[in-house]
Image (cartoon, rainbow, N blue to C red; front, side, top):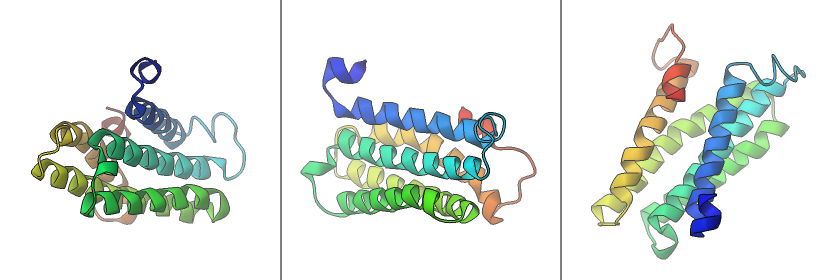
Amino acid sequence: GFFWRQGDISYLFYACFLFFTGLVCLTNTGLLGIEYFPLPGLQPRLESFAISMAIVFTGLFTASFLGLHRQSGLSLWLTVVLLFASMASAIASWLLDATFSLQLSYGIILLSTLGFIVVGGSCYLRGIRHAGLSLIAQMPIMLSASLAIMPQFNVIPLDFSMNLPVLI
């Protein structure tokens, strides 16, 4: 609704990000792909695809919200690289081994978290109007998602589920 009334594509990108984040939560808990639609290999592939697409729309929202198309330098370059990596991961989720594609998308989460913090920070230091708001809004989501997947790579040992902080 906001996109059609305001005419700002940022709203559409954010709505798509929320949709794919919800899809990640549904597949991560096993509701989609295991409980409903229990097809062989669907759950990890769908989760990997949803993670990658959530990152794609995070990047598109960040670029649109911060007006990166009017800039050059590190912020634009890093955002474009993260967008292409996430799109490649989304395609790979259906073509590669399900477990490998899920680990690939987890790695993209870690890289994109660092990347988008650098993008937001550099834009903030350059005085871009909405960069501080973007950092404040995205940082808890990205950091909790990164914290939730670190046990997958044995970076930090966690014995409890991190789904709740990601949902919050």
